Structures are given as C-alpha cells and as structure tokens.
Length: 236
Ligand SMILES: [Cu+2]
Image (cartoon, rainbow, N blue to C red; front, top):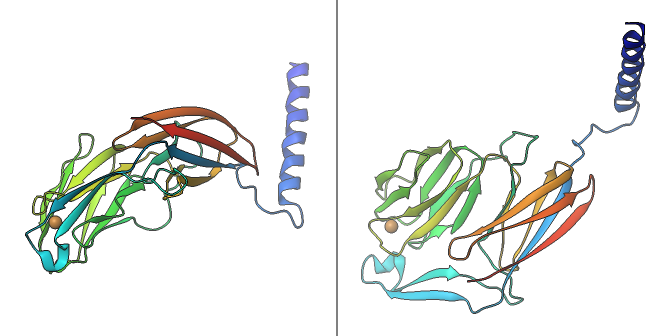
C-alpha cells in the first residue's frame, strides 16, 4: 500500500513536471510527435493510354477521349497512386476543406481523389448533362443525373472504401474516390511522389493502391520531426 502510494506520488510529480515543461514559456504546443513519410512510386513500363473516338457533346468533350489507365512521368514516376498508412491511429481529424470532384472537359478532375469520410462536392463545369454513377459497397451507391444548371451536388461517403465513379452519359468517363479512415494519405503526381505529414511516430505500414496495378505494402519507422523515405515499384 505504502509502496503504491509512493509510486503514485512519483508519477504525479512526473506528470506535473511534464505539464510545466509543455506549458513553459516559449514552448510551442506539441505536434503529437509526428513525422513525415515521403513515398516515391515508380512503374518500369510504358504508359497505358487508350484513345476513343467521341461523337457526342464534342464542343465540350472534344473528338477524342483519353482513358489514362497508367500515367507515367519522365522519371518513371507513377501518377494517380493512393499512398496511405494502414491502420494509423491517433488524430481523427478530417483534412481541411471539402473535397471537390469536378467534371471538366468530360473528364473527372482529379482522376483519383482521396478523402476522409464525409461530404464531397461534385461539380459540373461543362454546361452539358453529366451523370454521377458510383460503384460502392460500403456506402450507398449514387446514380444521379447532373444537368448543366446543377453546378454542384453534395454527396456523402461515410465509410472507408475505394469507389469507382463513372458517367452514364459519357461511357469513357472514369474516376476514383478513395475514402480513408484517417488523414494520413496522399495521391502521387507525375513524379510519382507524395508526402504524408504528421504521421504518428513508430512502426507504420504504408500501402500503395493503383487502379490497374493493384496494391503493395511496406513497413517504415516514422520518427518525430523527421522525414522517412519509402520507395515502391509497381508491376503489372
Ligand atoms: Cu458525363
């Protein structure tokens, strides 16, 4: 009993000391001890872009649609890959700002969008009729016309999953929305790179997902205030 009380007092002193340190003059609030993951995703192959003749709404859509299945940058960087920390715990805060999926030039922009659960604005910048059709299983499926006068429709994706999005008016239109349970994610640009910031320190599993090349996983050690680099090479 005596021993336990002694331990309690010691603990109380430590806690008080830590509190004094955190709250001390000039000390910045702790950032949760997070680090940065810089992921570089490469693809050692040729880009895959299919072309399709368009004969509908050509004044907005053009006469040729590009279906970009594998977009590769000049240094073999793979674009449109979602990089996320699997099972990351800690902050449950959503990313700032409502995500926007635009329909512009009869394409979904961005082609791959990642978000935390919640609302998304689906825009129609084209002045023609589009239709939003989602292939989801965890979230209710959306299949709605978006006439030209309906500039924005707000939808809600509450459950984490990767959702395929199409438009039934323009068969080639294809987009992806990755709903992730935490804010630790990024989507690669044409250099194949994305950075994930404020990731809780410790061993973390990093996952890459690409619409045609599938998934890969690697473990990294995240250190507070530091950047850890991790490289992936996706294969067919
Ligand atoms: Cu459309």
